[in-house]
Image 1: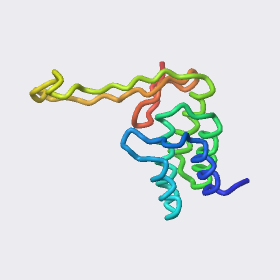
Image 2: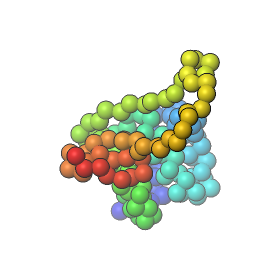
Image 3: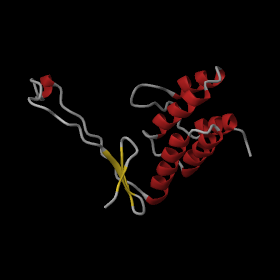
Image 4: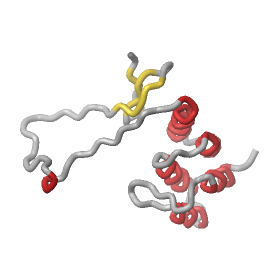
Length: 138
């Protein structure tokens, strides 16, 4: 079995040239961090970029194995989840608020506001998964 660093390099090779995350991180940034041996950061950035593209199952499998070798259990679970979604399908929606100039709110919310968990997806055996990693059973 290859070491985690080789697995991360192979995963990066599966991304399309010019791939970038929503926050602007590019594949070239990933390769730069590889040269500096910032492996945990490389994993995180590959996960972010992978979330933006339709990547093959092998991409998430490589990241899962690398995260497992690096003993990053939260990342292992996320990559397994994304691999499951690639295999079985998923519907994703990106929600955003309008800026004030575009007709959004111009004042703060009044009163006490409690934030609610964002539900990221549904797994038929595990229930819903939220942003904090909690699972909500149906």
